[in-house]
Image (cartoon, rainbow, N blue to C red; front, side, top):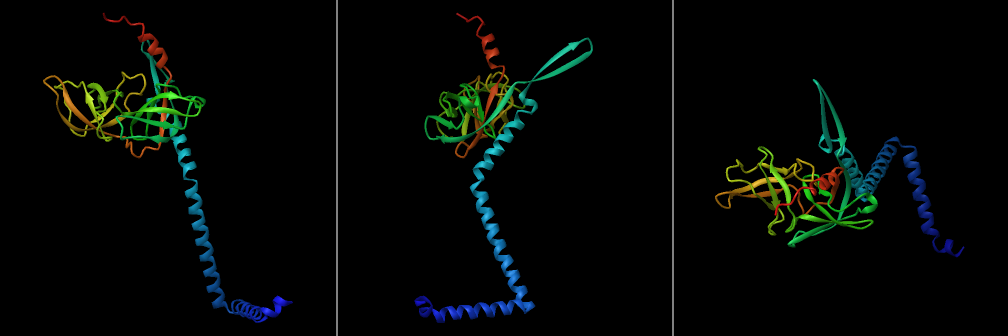
Length: 272
C-alpha cells in the first residue's frame, strides 16, 4: 500500500500510456502496420547479430571440421596411392594401393625468428603420429615430425638449419635439396642443381620421388632468384609457398611403405 501511494501517479501514467498505445495500434491499421514492420526489423536484426556472434564463437570448430574433411579428401587423391603395374601378355592390370594417409592438426605453437625453428601440433601418438612424418599446409610443405607425446608433437620446421628436403624443378625433373640459410622466413635455397639445368624465375619447386617422407610433387615454392655458386652449380633462392607467420592448420602425412623402403635400403653396402 505504501508503494502504491508513493508511486500512484507514475503507475497511473504508465497504465494510461499503455492503454493509449494499445488502442492506437489495435484500431488504426496504418500505425499497426508501422509497429509490426518496426518490430519485425528489430527482432530480425537481433537474431542476425546473435547468429553472427554465435558463428564467430564456432569458427574454431568449423575450421577443424574443414581441416578434417580436407585430410580425408587428400587421402583419396591419386597422389596418395602407390601404383603397381602387372603386365600379362597384352593385358595391363593396374592396382591402386593406399600409400599416404593424412591427419589434420592445429598449430598451437610456432616460431619463425630463430635459427632452428619448431612447431607444436595438437596431435600425438594417440592420433597415430610418429617421428619422421611429413607435415604440410594447404599451400605447401611445413616440416617433419621430430618428437611425439600422447597428445602433442613437435615439428622441425622448414625454417631450421637442420632441415633438408629432397626437391626438384617441376618442369624438367632436375633434383637437389631445399635448405634454409637462417635469414628470411619467406625464402629458402635449392642446392645441388647443375649449372646447365634450365631454370627461370617463377618455376615451381616440388618434393622429389627420392624422399621417403614427403609424397612426390608437393609444392615447396617458386624460384625467386637464380645465379651461380661456382662453375658447377647454380645458386637458387625459393619463395616458400607456406606462410610460416600465419600457418594454423596442417596435415601430418603417413607413408605406409616408409619402413619397408628404409629397411631395404639399409642393407645396401657402405662405401669404404
